[in-house]
Length: 413
Image (cartoon, rainbow, N blue to C red; front, side, top):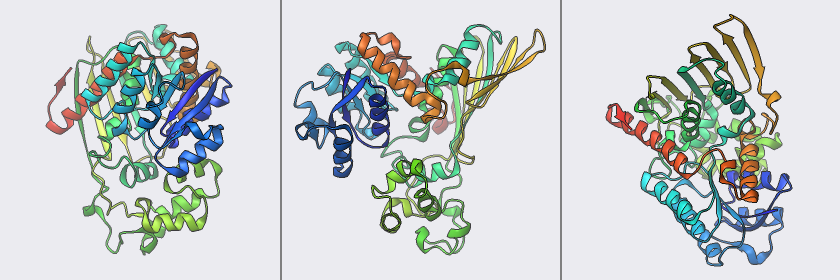
């Protein structure tokens, strides 16, 4: 049984902790969370004694090592200090992505893990899905020959973007980071994983095109509850959050970010006074709503990655083009064309086994937690898909892409 300290009991921290407990191989024995409601809820759910419930990570760390491992799921700009301190105490770390908003902070975390000999698993959940195992296995078997080009789409979803990146915690670079880092660092990590090496050159383009004051419709008000256009607006907070009340799954997310009380009265009160009731054209957001990244890998292989708010919220879609074949995937199934025979086949990731693709991130949440628990139980860091150095390397690709977007230059890694 792996014992866990939960540092940050928000939506992601709760998700990982619940997966660990559900396996029967993990037990949460301590929690650090500044929000009283979340702290008390986590303590009650996981049966944590009062003496192991803390208002912050520093108070938890002051007690010494209380568990085998820690789940660090604080806000992005609060990762470095607890991760370094807990690694120095000997905790193995399950660290929510991104590692940190800047390279020096992420490098400090990686160095702490390495000097203390602890396992660091960054939550690049896309690596751990049955679908990824299927795709990577076909590539490694040479089923499409040498990988020459990849076209990858992350369909963020119109309402998801409005929730998280216009009204929510990841709406401003100064408070979290650029959207490519906060939303898509695990897409970039996944693409590097498929190619088996980092790219040599990166370029990028993107901007905040729609969610800005200049796009505000005539007659729109600052809050959805007062707006005469609300009923026909695709970004209506009233429609999104009141509609989530009837669905238990949506009560946890996205509604859980808005209010801890899933009632109509509480939702309306939050929309009246809190950030999630703001008009998307009158918020203080500054992150991009679409971005394209172009990568060139050693040997000339290329990859284009598009992240866009202006889609349904769906699984990623990827086309992989090789010298001997072609794969076209939607996160669940793959169409395989063999150039040598002309034959086509449809392959289903469900046949790969493991966590269900219907689970969070296509089974990636559960797959990540299971791999981490196995690694800690066995004392074998190779049981997680990427170590501290590899995660830092793929983060560096993201920072290079953002530099390219801001400067208009091609950045060489």
